Image (cartoon, rainbow, N blue to C red; front, top):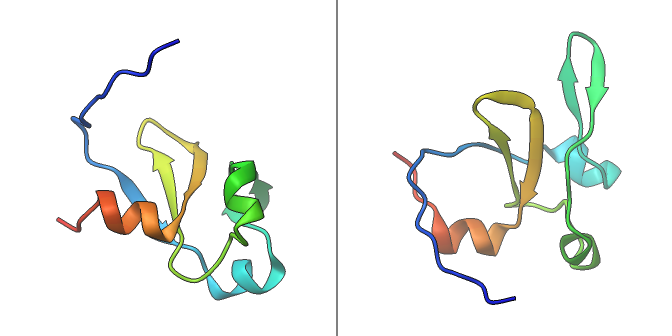
Length: 81
């Protein structure tokens, strides 16, 4: 199947991975005192994520839907507003 290029039309909501998450080697989302999962790709795990500079993105319409964005991908593709 062929990949097609798409340009983002929305603003992304992201936060840095925390020091605690980096030290524990896992990501934490706290919402009403419960922990929710953050998706991390196998490739990012193999590259040592979560690590300093990684960002956590979330779906603005569903804040429980969160995933890791690797530092280099973030730096190559995003800028602060």
